[in-house]
Image (cartoon, rainbow, N blue to C red; front, side, top):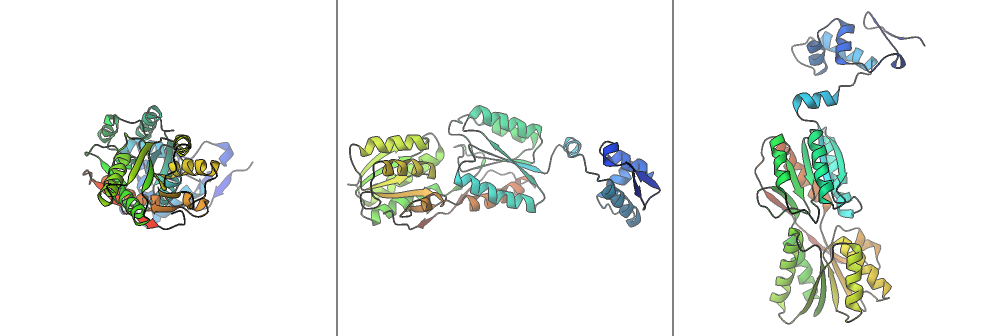
Length: 347
């Protein structure tokens, strides 16, 4: 195969099949320039003449030169890559968060690496190590339900890698946390049940060790008790769709409440599976209300009444905070995203 001819310079370029990838050093040799001059020309450095910059860029384009990002990462100890670590992608909230985050990341010239922990603290630690070795610029993370020791997260600061916790966050105050306003969401749910005159309520919450569960449980129960001390409230915990299904199947076999409160989309799916298995009618036989990202409630008829917790909005705020951290503003802070009631037909 004949080699390509470079008409701009006194050089001949081998074909892509006849030589390895073009390097900065090779470009410099072709142009009889120093490596530093070629490097600065590619970066539009003002000390390099316009003519030289043009020649270097033309040759780089013809030769299909691509910077060695790994070498750059080693030299600068940082990349233009951000990482997000979540328990699972099979979750509407996280899908919305990642979609929104990816839009912001791309606009600012970064790339996004997505990692799943499988809700396993060991895999979570392996993902942290991978991020450190890849010299990512920052990490967004929603911790697992079993994560209790967060000392390893703080160590990322020694490598100048800021961490923004979101959704499922540690209880520690000395970290950056972006969350839905859990107190507001649970309070709205409780007030809605009161307004609908529900007297016998079954509430299903998530893992009781998580701060998100503690905040929602406290706000929900306090609001109900303050409005009606006589209200009958049964509280249960479930860590998965299957667990919430089992809770409801066992509970409803003994007594039928006026309404069920679901702390999350995951719990709502399990609850609705049980309700449908028992062939109960919503809202005739039983009322349902949930805290939700917003998609799951639309899967049912009538649509489930829910309190919106937007992963889309959360990602926007998390990214703004990450950019501030990368710029040097690393002060600890907890930001909260407001919630709103979306009326369906389930109460």
